[in-house]
Image 1: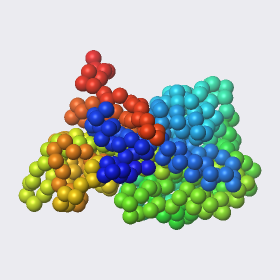
Image 2: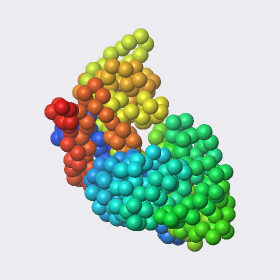
Image 3: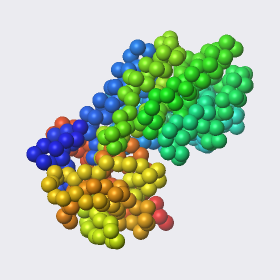
Image 4: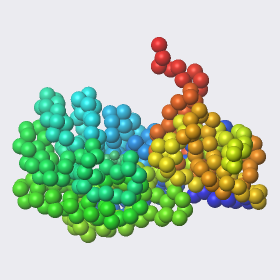
Length: 410
Ligand SMILES: *Cc1c(COP(=O)(O)O)cnc(C)c1O
């Protein structure tokens, strides 16, 4: 939902330059209708079966965005007590909240049980015992799935591979059947689902299929042992097209494959994050200075690695485009921030037009793991977030201030 109109880049019907004028730069800008369309694509694809599309809140936990998704029928995939808190505040029905993570603390487990969330995606035997104990004390039954590590290796950055042997995630495939038998005998535990999440930014359905086939076999064994699995949870992980040259499968393509493996008689949970919010949000930045060092051209912008750490952390590629279309000559450019680290870059060796000081740039598709992973490193206040709907732009998070940097200091 971004395009040039009269040589000016717009998001929906609002120009980025008008947003910069009103809210300053750098800033995160989201398209409301892109978010809704992305969610609807999943919901529509789920139609042949029953179940839930649980938005992975860790990708973007802005309250207004969560509220929008809750209002449109999404559930929430959470990974901390704080995320459950945010999801409840945003209006998610607790019976649509699932809770994953390898290190749920006793406090978080108690909080989740009291909130009456749908289920825990349990990642270890020790965690299972703690849930059982706390549920007993609270006199409630805890519904669980085990997160299974199916030992498949998707082709993605090693930091975001999670379903391979030797990663910290889930219960090893070989131990999973036994785990269900143990859980089914525990007094305060009800196993209701089986879960897997193999990684993130996966642009090929093959590893999802491979994982689903393994999970199907396990699920059959578990059900044959008399344990009914109401839900099949296939996690998230569907990639998006960051470069404009690497199209990712549509949700329907993925889900049709999953349905053909499991049949449609089950309830399904999917936990998309990136593929709901990734291409709906962008980082708007301004050129502060230009310089040439060695044979390199640099654009130094007011956005930096504290605002968007993906390029630094995962060597992730984000397309970068000028907000005003120009015929200026293109030169090989590094787009960098003001932070005192060589890893502080948004993009390297990009063919970009020679821009002037003060001109605007857009770092595209930064809606997922962008603002959510930002920090105040170098004492840079967190960026504002703006949600655009048609010809209206609304501030959904204020720009932090110098004063707010000191908020919790004593
Ligand atoms: C991160 C995560 C997701 C979302 O992954 P995306 O690649 O953003 O879709 C889903 N489920 C779990 C358990 C996760 O940790």
